[in-house]
Image (cartoon, rainbow, N blue to C red):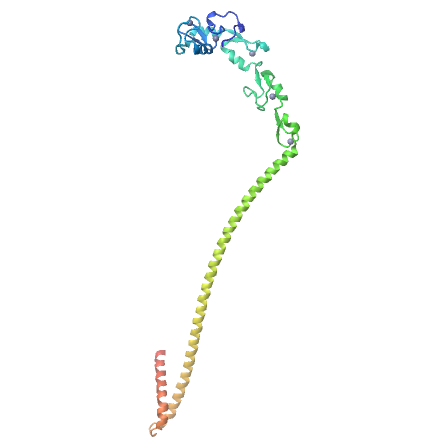
Length: 297
Ligand SMILES: [Zn+2]
Ligand SMILES: [Zn+2]
Ligand SMILES: [Zn+2]
Ligand SMILES: [Zn+2]
Ligand SMILES: [Zn+2]
């Protein structure tokens, strides 16, 4: 659809009108027959027709071309009133710069949650449509405007919600959440510590039983050694006793020999009964003593 001819200031060449809508060309295209149309107009025409709407010559969409340059220049220089002239905008600009103006026109209606230009979306959700020039004053009283709670609880509130806002309830809920979170964390740490302690305990128990068995081993070894020592001491005592006895015997025998010495020449044979009874064991004992002295030496 083209621009309404009424909006233009001054004369508009008929060649700049669309052959379909008869308004001033918007995004123009030109057919091989030189007729020109708005892009939207000819596109919808060609859905049901295959000819130029002006002279009925055959026409295919692929043959459409941009407008001649001189016509484009004429078109862009046309003076047009702002689309918001009805609301009070008296801006007139050339067609080329129309969109630039309309994008910033203070009379254009925009929604409160508009985010373009210098305006900030305070709160998406406000359904109010205001002229761009009235947005700032609307935002001051917009129900969807958010601001910090005046009681200082730290929450951001929408103006629309302020009457129902209860700082204490909000803070209590928050506190409950924090407490639950803390309890969860404490529980996790507790479980971790417990499992660590458990593993340490198991380790200690293993070590203890190991040490116990080692101690038992050592005890066995010590008692064996004690037995050995006792046996050795006993053997030593017996040996000393034997030695003392043998010494005594030796002294007795030597004494006896000394007593016998003077009678050796004249003395007749000793009584046979006594001789055979005493001589043998004494000589055996002497032999024994001699051999012991040899080993000692
Ligand atoms: Zn048109
Ligand atoms: Zn034509
Ligand atoms: Zn305007
Ligand atoms: Zn609003
Ligand atoms: Zn509050």
